[in-house]
Length: 527
View (cartoon, rainbow, N blue to C red):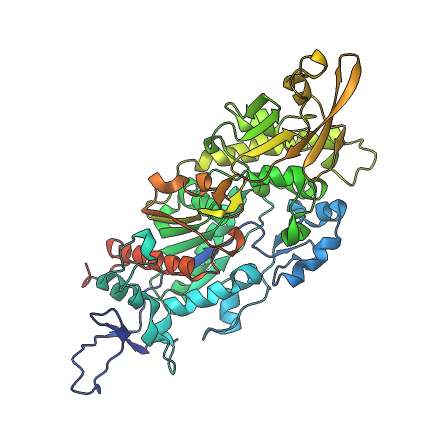
């Protein structure tokens, strides 16, 4: 839009409704309108996608991961562990930026392509991007009534949800937000690679966006607002706080971030994923491990030391062990040839049928844990942008793996044949004699002159959450964030598809935008 165009600032009435007035308004209209030049100050709002939420291409530049729709992901159901390992190799993949772009804004496809909309999964974010673009730029839609129903003005009348007890937006917060352009962008990243590398790509994209507005239009553009989903929150925090780019970020909205990790990552490595998501992620341990164990980004979703102790629980009758005691990396993730360890080493390389390279494969996996997973966790621990807003799932109907529990299927009854039970420590020191790959493992233990086979079964999830991230992890930023609130009624992947969470994001973005008055992008007449 040319710089000479003008826009009329919305009038916010006492009841919170927004409307527009002009010099030709009827004399009975007692509202006042203030006309401003078309805003020359831009604050890009940037969505940072979650794991599996960015489109990827292979070395041939053709898309290999393109979740434009749930139906479009169906071919993954036919791919075995070997094909998954080859196709989703973090060293041979990169972001693919030609994904489907949702319609419904006044922007051209070319403009939205430039903004990165084609980099992220349309199935997960397409509708939200359209909604957010229209909600943040409603005043620029001539010929429609959209601006008259401006959602920011409606959020002056009530908070995002009554039960959260959040204050409605103020008149000044809404009014100031209309004096800036808030174009919506998206940044994808290779979610197979180290999230520290993804943070570097986020930095490069932000620099491109800001330079484009300054160079092409002469706009003032010195700050961005980030809106993250799931693992994208870890990437954004690394960019802001570890790479020290916090001064370029006005604030961050985090949705369903696995702050201290998610025990579901361990569960999937041991038992795959059930239902439709399993066709994509992997239905058993073999399919999941083939990709998971070579991908530092995915491994960085494992519970951190700050997740807490004792979340891995193993029970045989009255005997009980819980881990970690202090260190999940050494005590769980790097335990080799233990049936309850994170990965079974024969599954690391399905391309090696004779298992001649297992030692090398294990060494490569251990290197990822030691050099990329643990250091990344340590680097971002307790580090958040000073202007942070968070929502997470806390739904008791969506049970989530907070703890992961193994229980012996048929424990030996007390006093059976007047012999003491097999020590649980003996069972824990064994590799599996049989592993279903879907949540049950059989351990063969010599005892009292014969060999006994004991089956351990993975138990159902036990904690409130969103089906992926448990409450304990999602709520972890409460002591650091401006606002950290729980929601019910949505699953993890669909966090931004429901109206309550969308309105929270809009509310938080408007609150964050108000802090621009303390920066070099402030207007002198607005304090």
